[in-house]
Length: 66
View 1 (tube, rainbow, N blue to C red):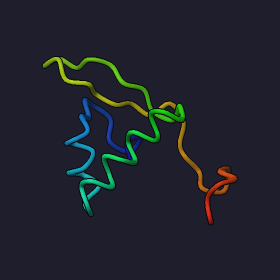
View 2 (cartoon, rainbow, N blue to C red):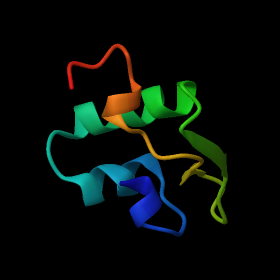
View 3 (spheres, one colour):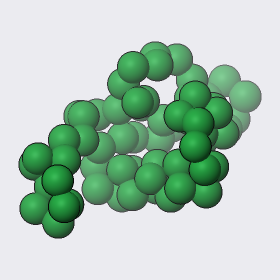
C-alpha cells in the first residue's frame, strides 16, 4: 500500500488511504517498519513519514498462513 502512494505518508495518512480498522493499520505499519519493509524519516512538518523499501509478499513470509 505504501509503495502505491508516493509522497509524505504519515501513519495517519496510511490509515486513511488503507481504510479498515485504524488500529490494525497502525500495527501493520509498525511491524513493516520493524521487519525492514518500510523506512521512516522526518517530513517537512517534522512528523515521521514512511517510504517502502521493498514490498511485503505473503508468500515470502514463513510465518504467514498464506
